[in-house]
Image: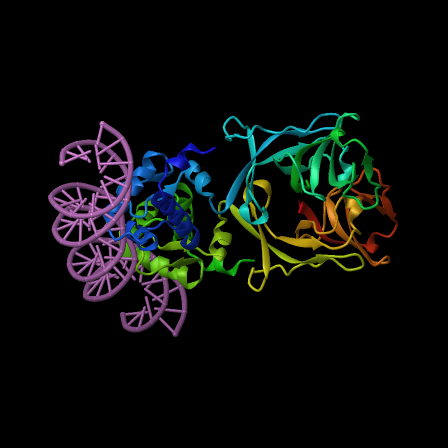
Length: 220
Length: 220
DNA sequence: ATTATAAGCGAACATCCGTTCAATGTCAAG
DNA sequence: CTTGACATTGAACGGATGTTCGCTTATAAT
């Protein structure tokens, strides 16, 4: 999946992580010697050697003639998983009678018009996320309504009880429900506890299209 | 409202903004001399003099013996309005039969156990925000349910049609509704379009406790 | 065995950088 | 007018910092 990361030696990934951690802790990048202290390399020139490699492959960027003039590039932040802000591509719309769009697995954020930016803290696992805008009130039994943004994780299967976006083949309907496998049938439980569950006898009618991670509603 | 900011001279606020901008642009803090270049001060000692003042009032923090060892404190980020991340204090719980907590106007983030961090981009105006956790399903007609987080802005009055947290005195009930003043009475409209509005004849029964800015639902 | 490549060390150096010091200017209060 | 607090300057010092250079070691390919 990530060709860059494979090209890195253990030392180099260690250095990249150290730079990331240092910035996160102190609010400014480390010096060559401070990196050395953390990764256990005595020679400053040797660290420079590795930093040159990291810069060559485009994971970091440096300002020559500037002390601590080092920062992770977008690629660098991605390979090592940076601290604060996660950009989630907004790839489409949830609509009644329409399957829920699932982006390709190598989505690169290029060519995506819009992203929403969240902090790592309020998300759990930040891998394979994408976001959809809700159109219409067809998801209202999931306590989701027009204009909301749903953050999803691209998965093929879900655990019992997880909230998923499912496509019901026969009804030609997309819906957000908690999915329970009960013997041979499937129970789809609305988020609204006042509403009754749906039972599907043929599990093949239920196609998992993703897993709901978060719902965000901006109120004008 | 902000006593700190008034105590700052023009020069000092300018320096604070310069530090903020520099970090934002380059990814690392400026040196004393780089600050001088931008604000037009030739003497390094003079800049140190102002940095000492800024540190005294707690707007910046410095690592002695570290080059570029300067960062904005939370207070500093707030006075000068920092770039990306906004920390919103999580001050309590919304519960049926309980007024909605409203923090004091000078909430300083000190003594607050928990905060949620969001990016400036998905919020609009980031002033006077606080957050509440929803407990129970009493807000379900606002499409909000147990465990959701509601981001609020501390206001005393709302525009017509805005979603607000209101306390109904006679019912002893807190609820999230769109508020419409219709002549002498007040219409409270649920977010769920399938549900009927509530009409209150005596406007004094309706006490605005805040304005809903965002609803966030983390799905397990 | 030889060679190429990556990994590593330590010293030396010029520059960068935070800090200190002595001195001057400004301006309102006493 | 004097005083004292604040603002500003310039020079100098010592330590921090990125870079260069020469050298050594380990590993794998030729």
